[in-house]
Amino acid sequence: MNTKERIYHAIMFELLALAIVVPAATFFSDKEASSLIVVAVGLSLYAVFWNFFYNIWFDKQFGRERISRTVLLRVGHTLGFELGIIFITVPVVAWFLEISLSSALLMEVAFLIFFFFYAIVFNWCYDHIRHQVVV
Image (cartoon, rainbow, N blue to C red; front, side, top):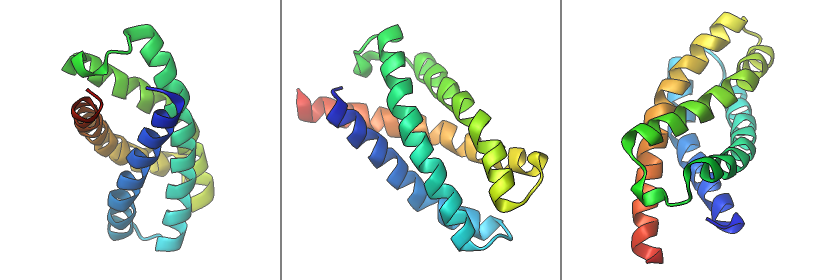
């Protein structure tokens, strides 16, 4: 993917995720929606930045032919991405929402479980749709 498409991919990934996560977090949390929106948008901006550079590195390491990636490689890709996210997000969420690190970690685990499956499905769909449009 070129730079323009990488940016498009990251933004689409985050916008769809926000549309799912913010209402769910508001429903399951005792925090105000406005606080959760600020956290979600801030973390999304960080995730877009991380996504852009992580995927450039990943493509260099494992090849640019995305359509032929195995499920195992997609799982590894997602795990690597999420581990890179967790080191920043847990302390930031704890600080901003004024909760303990353990509570923030628990919240992050719930999000990681969601994003683990979401990322695999989103990227598989994106790659196959892209393959139909580009080829």
